[in-house]
Amino acid sequence: MYGTSRADFPRRIVCLTAETAEIAFLLGAGDRVVGVPGTARRPEAAREKARVGGFTTFKLERILALEPDLVLAFSDLQRDVVRDLIGAGVTVLCTNQRSFDEILDAILVIGGALGCERQARELIRDVQDDLRQVREYSAAWPDRPRVYFEEWMDPLIAGIRWVSEAIEIAGGSDVFAELREKRAAPERIVATQDVVERDPQIILASWCGKPVDAARIASRPGWARIAAVKSGQIHEIDGADILSPGPSLVHGVRRIHEIIQAFQATG
Image (cartoon, rainbow, N blue to C red; front, side, top):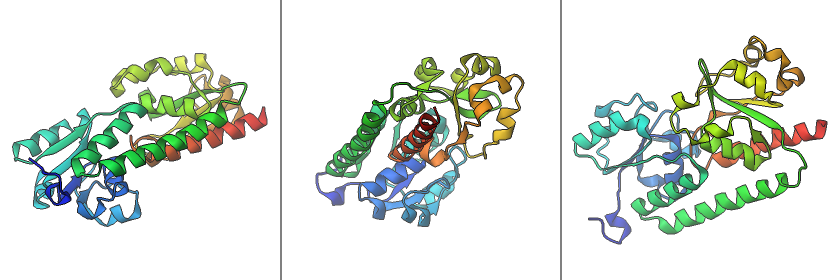
């Protein structure tokens, strides 16, 4: 069992996702992080750590060579590497957040595991304050534009719950809000005709590391009738800002808010 002094908490931490690395650094535990995924971008110092693989393409030997006493993982998508690490005797903390509330809970859980509960609560307050400012600003708008978020393009996959919530916080109305309860991507597959029928005024896309092709989106059969296509309202959102369930979502919310604000100004 870990004791109450910082020396008794994990000293060699490997993070398997960008958001767990970001959280560890923001909590002041960056000096204890010895490995990160290739997707880690924030903060800059995280990029200097040893790379242990991609989101689902890890080399067990590479992780074990770092001799971690704690590995931070995320979601059922990493269950295979989590299983192998546990089988090798490594302690793993795997969170599975999908909503903003669950993200804040995950920050607190990770903070507790690292001996940084106070810092975790401070980070949570900072995130809440940032989101509150955006929410209060957008609440003054009389209308909320219809927004479609595309997480993948073949097949079309609508946004996960935290993306749907981000759209609402930023001042938009998610045209597939009913799918936010679906935790797995295959459950959020939508038909091209469904998008046409819901006629979004703004299309946002982030294709999981693949560059978004706005022209390809606009040229889909029947999509010329969509309001967002007619007005050129197709925008790429950086995956680091919207697809990692951690503090960086604040950047995504702000970016979506800027897009909606500019749209409102044209109305």
